[in-house]
Length: 422
Ligand code: AMP
Ligand code: GLY
View (cartoon, helix red, strand yellow):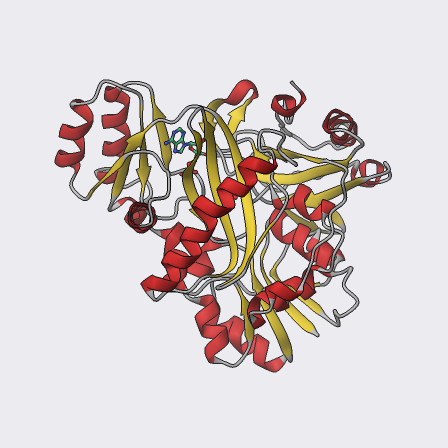
C-alpha cells in the first residue's frame, strides 16, 4: 500500500521511520517532510496545509492511506477532504478536531461529561476577562482558545500577570484569531503526563504513557515551547491510574463526541496533571504528541500501518500491540533563541557518530538538505532518542549521542527525565 504522511516535524520522522518497517508498505511519501523523513520515503514539496494539492497528489499516486501528523491540517478539514475523494485518512474530521482547535469546545465537552479538569471560565471580551482576573488572588492560567503551536498558555502566579497575558492575547492579538476567545482557569499542581490512545470512534487502545518537558529551561524554567524532551513510560502513572484515566477521561470523551455528532477517530491525546486529587485534564490534542511520539514509537514493536488502518476501518478491537519493555528518552536539540527568534541554515555535524551508538535513533525535526549538507531549518531541530534498560540508562545514552552532534547555537535541556529518575 502507498502511504502519504502529512507534516515535517520530529513526530513525522518518527512516524515515517516506523511505517518504513511495515511489511505492507509499498511507497511512502511525506509532505513536506524534512532531511530525516527523506531517508524513510520520498519527500514531496507540497505544504501540509495545501489540502487541494495533497488530495490531487493522493489521487494521482494511488495512495491507500493518508496519515495527518499536525493539528493545523486536521482542524482545516484535511481528513474530510481525503475521505470525500475516496481516500482513507487517519485522523479526526474538522468537527472532531475542535477538541484541540477550540479549548472552549473541549472545556464544554468536559463539563457536560463530568471529566475532571481545572475550574475555568471562557471570555470573548477583554474587559470581562480583566474584571474576573482582578477579582482573583490565586495563581491562574490564561489560554488562547485556538491553535497557537503550544505557546498560547500563560501560567501566571499573580493576577497582574494574568491581565497582561489576556491583554496580549485579546488586544495585541499575538496569536491572531486563535485569541478571540480566552480561557482563564485555576492553576493545577502536580506532575504532568501525556496519555495517547488510538481511537476508532468505538474502541480505544491506550498506548504506553509518556511525559513531555514544555518549558525551555532546566528545572522547568522560562517560557513554554512545543516540548524540549520526553520519556516513556512515565512512572507517575501506575496501572491503577491508567485504568482510572481510561474509564473517567478517555471513554467519556469518545462517548461525548459520538453524542455531539462528531465521532472521534485517530489519536486522542490527553495532557493531564496528576494532582493530589487524581488525574485532571489540562488539554486534549487530536494527533500524536511531539516529542512524545519519538520515545513511544521507538518502544512500539507492532506494525504501525496495520494499527492506523484498523482505526480507519473501525476494527481496532482486532489488533493487539506489543511494546518493548525498555524505557526510551528523547532529548530535543533546538536552535539558539527558540522559542523566540532564531537563525536557520546552520550546518549540522556528528549525526552519523550519534546514530552509530547502539539503541539510538536521531529523529529530525527542523532540518533540510543543502548542497549535500544537513542544515537547521526550524526551532526544534532534532530529537535524539535512546532505549535503555532503565530510564537513567536511556538518558545517559541519549545525552552521549547529543554530545556528538554540533551546530552553531545548538541548545538542549540537560535535565530531561530527571523527574522519573528521582
Ligand atoms: P496546554 O496547551 O493547555 O496543555 O498548556 C500547555 C502547558 O501549560 C501544559 O503542559 C502545562 O504545563 C501548563 N498548563 C496548562 N493548563 C494548566 C493548569 N490549569 N495548571 C497548571 N499548568 C497548566
Ligand atoms: N508535546 C506536546 C504536544 O505535542 O502538544
